[in-house]
Image (cartoon, rainbow, N blue to C red):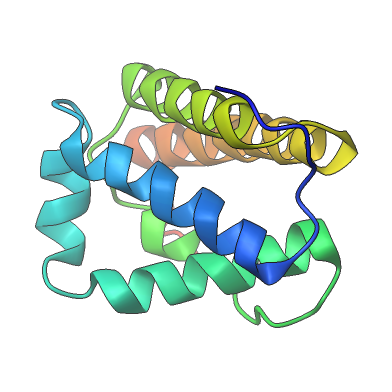
Amino acid sequence: MSSTRDISTIDDIKLLVNTFYQKIRENELLSPIFNGIIQDRWPEHLEKMYRFWQTVLLEEHTYFGSPFPPHAKLPVEQKHFDVWLALWHFTVNALFVGEKANEAKWRADKMALMFLTKIEYYKNNPAIPLL
């Protein structure tokens, strides 16, 4: 059931992130990767994701870091990003509607493309990612 409101507060970000990552943790393809790497550090990871999306969508600068390096050596390929994006779009659409909701989907699409491109580059080239 879709909401009639947009993403506008940190509580909205938390709802989005928590709902999305619950789906990730239950997904047959993605859960082994995420649960294997994050292990018992889910609260820490979720806090980081709240800050990231708060910075990106609400323009409240609480995230300081570089999002790509932790992902540089993940054992992922196109199919993983396809599932990740499908779950993200489904979650956003189920919870929100509006300009920020559309931006959340657009930004995730761009980020997934950039991450996949960089991951594939480092898999196929001797260069060492800047970590």
